[in-house]
Length: 568
Image (cartoon, rainbow, N blue to C red; front, side, top):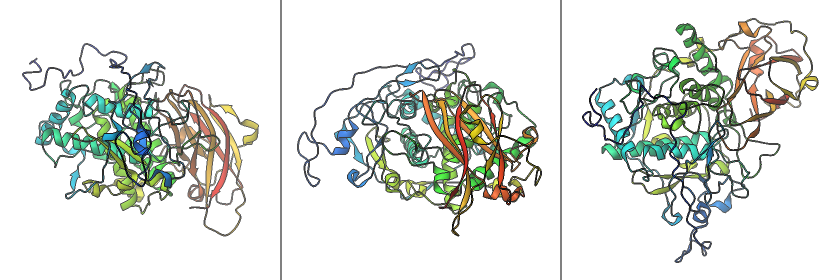
């Protein structure tokens, strides 16, 4: 085999080795002390003086960079979540061991507000449309090689870019006000906008390194037949900088991706899997995402979650989580690697293509499905800090990323097969006679270690306004560092005969391994008015709910109920 230098790779780029596949990737724990700086709050009416910082910069501190900060006018917000920037600490791997993934520290006085002002709009194209050896492939691999060869202290370095994700989702930061207050850019309304900005700057760094401001990241088109496998440019051999050896070897091409995959599931007939995937997309994007909170996730504000914790939007749970765990080398124990666990997922270059398609779902929701953005000021004026393509720290806000064309990119207008009525889930059998099952009060709380059935009473609707019935699974307790998943069915007397193409399968709750705190307490919701109509059960006064555990780790559930959503 030719030497790496002879092939054009710099000597400090080390690809995966065929002879060494460690259970865990090597760690780069370059620990450092954070400098202590004395500061005072900003003067008056926007004035500054030597040694005095803007209050936003005071709260940034010097302990790390990439996190949510206050808005441009922090005093105008009710209760924005704010991480403790002065104290970036070890994050946590799934096996419970610590890992230092704090990004390079930053001088708060250097942070500048950034407002996008794109004059041209570039096109992000599907990854499967590019061939290995094409001009695009050469540009993309060159960008990643250059990124990997930057100094380890350079915030644009590929590993440092991966650390951005790790620090913001695996306990690198806690909230201001207490070291035990959760901070996480996943499982809430922060998920979509934070990742949009993250990809934006990653793409800008690539453009800068190859001196091509027209370059765009590809998107993994896993919602269409042609893209439902790992694209060839990411699977072109061990020496390719787009390859990652910590992927599930059972899921390499031509295996068709499973958008509802659970650990232990085996590949099925490709045509059946494609049909399943299209129905999953219809279910998640249309049936289960009728409001902004369904799609983006629930509000995430400062302080302890208490009795009203945030929860993930439908797309984050499925297909986002399933694709992570399907792609990464992992099981449901403690050795999840790269895409299989959030702390390491951005180390695999395919992460950015995966999230580009997640971001594309946002544009489809707004432009094709008549969806709308969140209007809450705490969301709109929440801001994030990133290093830009010149390695300079900048502050951006959610309100400035709502239109991706203003960021200078859009997605190629490719077919969306799951919008077709043929992808709409269909009842396996209408108007079933419900089997006997206990009332939820007789069952919960319970540790879900086997399938359970409960009969849930439907509430009486009050008033004449438009509303929709919601099935709420509440008090879901689990260890965030474990892979957890369970499936949910309604009025299904034979779950073994039910597929994702069937209306009776509502969806799943899942957790990818991540985070510091051991116990999470959340909930998940499913819209059932249309489902019951299609099942011929509109007039039933009760429904059968079935929960099926799909992981080996315990998850406790405290209750199930049906309520009305008057915002529908």
